[in-house]
Image (cartoon, rainbow, N blue to C red):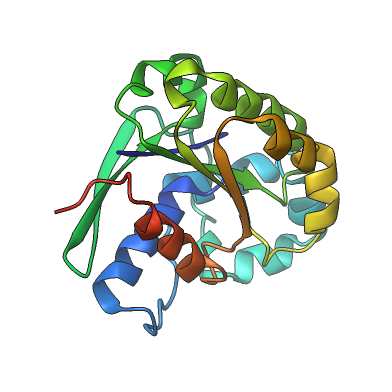
Length: 216
């Protein structure tokens, strides 16, 4: 079992949908237009009220509305995902079950750690105000006793959007070198865009390269 974790609105649901499509269509597949998910709709609604993605949503409203992924003109209010989502990813006769946990479920994430063999933790690079809380969540995950032997992949998502920090800046804020050096887990990092497809093949390769994952 792989746990897919991260704060609300970081793009976990879209990421899972894109990885599933990549498994079905092959490495060279054109992923096409990204589907609308609750988190992307919610991202737009909150951003327009200056609470999330201030740089992107306030300065680039016209660009945001022009993107197929963010066609939410008729939506007045949205809420974050609550609950879990189980998805089987099957590639070359191997199966990995990924459990996505809603960001607002953070306080009860530990209830799902016992069956977990790997963790994908997603960070929203475009949401500057959320970086510090994501760092706290990540450290909490890494310090959990049941996850001491889990493989961990940290994905810096939404690299296609304006106003994102560089990977060097993000790693500095997370003190990633210190985290990797002191954590008992094997930790990898990737820059991705679930919307454009950047880095998704590498993320999929990481998932299926870990021997501890479920097979079928």
